Image (tube, rainbow, N blue to C red):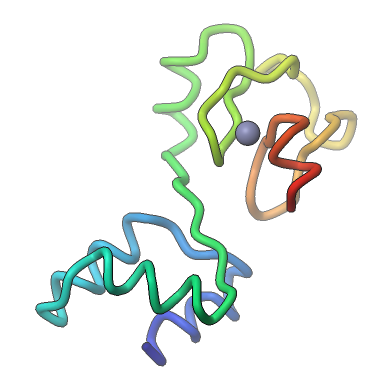
Length: 99
Ligand SMILES: [Zn+2]
């Protein structure tokens, strides 16, 4: 798991894609990786490439954790946004509160 811990320390979070890749490279199941990480208290984010998020969300940003539409417009500047976490992205009110 040291690879994932390093990644986590660099980024402050891990994405589902990184975990899937790690599981595949090591011949272990994704569910096992997920379980070990949650035991370590490491959060997993499902982060989609920026362009993809925009094309499916229309005018409003989607929460990077739960995928729900937020009330933040795609065109809004990052420093004026509510519930925006640097390095992670736009969250909805609920996920932001639970962070
Ligand atoms: Zn959310």
